[in-house]
Length: 164
Image 1 (tube, rainbow, N blue to C red):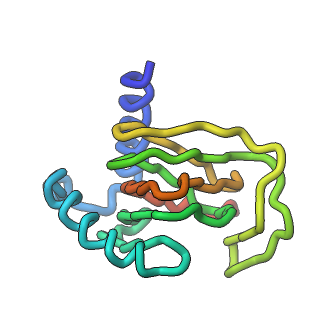
Image 2 (image 1 turned 90 degrees about the horizontal axis):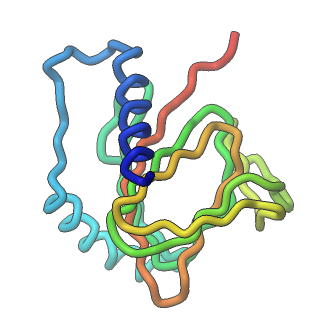
């Protein structure tokens, strides 16, 4: 089942990229697992020294999406993106992903980006290396990392066109 989900997620992302047709067909960016793990190891030092327990870097920007690498040593805050879908590909560690529910004390951090203090009524799922998570635009979510643990994930953030 997980294999089928990973294939479906990959097809969905590929279809999204293909529909944009903004890059020439011969364009490709490849990051090896070795490159990602080395960069994540360097970022772990930053995450451990950051009071929020996170280090994140944008890797590449494209017309309708961008990629990031994130390392967490602590849980993240509640967030919701009005016009962006998130795909998480788990590289290392384990985390609990909360999705849905209601954001407590919601605040607009910037246009289209809502933050909050906690989620109530959310669905909870534990993710491991190799798992793929898709979070649709408008879905509140939070990443929980157990004390003393590390969670590293590759993010593909797909920007949805505004409805006209």
